[in-house]
Image (cartoon, rainbow, N blue to C red; front, side, top):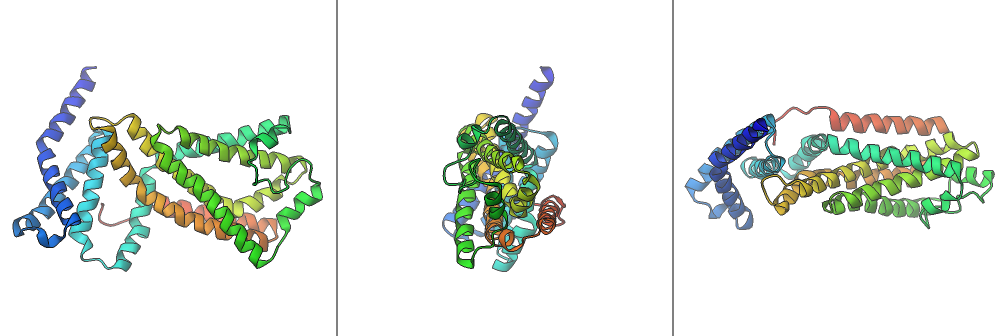
Length: 334
């Protein structure tokens, strides 16, 4: 207990000694953002870079000494705003977009690695539970499969009909319509997992679990007909990207829900706002991932009919996403 009290005292002292500078930087940035930089005086313009570097230094200390998370989130948000003011004017639109893809998005994803792991474990666990339930009692299938998603794939269908679904090429118009529908459905799961995370993570857990149970039930159906391997190729050619996107959306929701439940020394609203700003780049990138998944789902998996080719594409996309997100980037930290 004495050690905990010492850490709390150090955290309070650390904040008290520097908070005036943080608030001044926040006020100047708000003034520039809501009006324009031209409304700032010469002294204020000169003060912003100094205060920005001071905030970066404080953020480095806060991360290293494990101060309360709400303070770290606040400083991350403040440093990001300061960065765009100090350096943003020198960057073109193309450079900003490039910066988002090169640094901002993957850095934000790496910052949510704990939440991402939790989201993955919930999804994987639900897949296993769904598979075991339906394997033990096929009556569970209708309960776990949402209406409209089965599309005639149930235990009343013949093995040949189930196989046809996996290898039917269809026409281009039908594939485009399917891609649009599936993108909308999966985007809703990912975005809702993020947006409803503020309710102490409960809706996020339920959405991830429901998605996993549905997938597990589908594997149980096809596995009972000896088509489990074929179904895996049909799903994972797009599912690696799609499930990764949904897991990241859930991770962003967990970050917000955790901060709401344990806001630290600040208010819950402040903690939720800071967590939302930190997770926002992840969600923006998730939408792009779902666009890619929708195209793969509506086109590639139907046009590519060979199982090993489907698995090769799935493995390639997995390695690409893992390398993209978790390879450290060089450059100025935000």
